[in-house]
Length: 106
Image (spheres, helix red, strand yellow):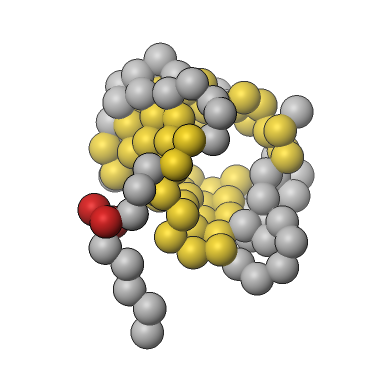
């Protein structure tokens, strides 16, 4: 069993203003995705990107627009392989993301 304490993991910058993440687990292999905690400041945006594999996510706090849907704390979504979308934080937001493969920025 492997455990991590989130409060001890540092937030990492991904060079997108207002977006930080904590890597919880990386899948084995190049570009293989993993499990990540993402924090977005209100008004920040993640650019359009394509999913070469499935993405599952759960909003833990805040409000987030993903593509043409709006998600609130407690909402869960699945993005299938090949789908493209962007994301915008409508409030300070944190969400947990599990990806099969790393997304491709467009």
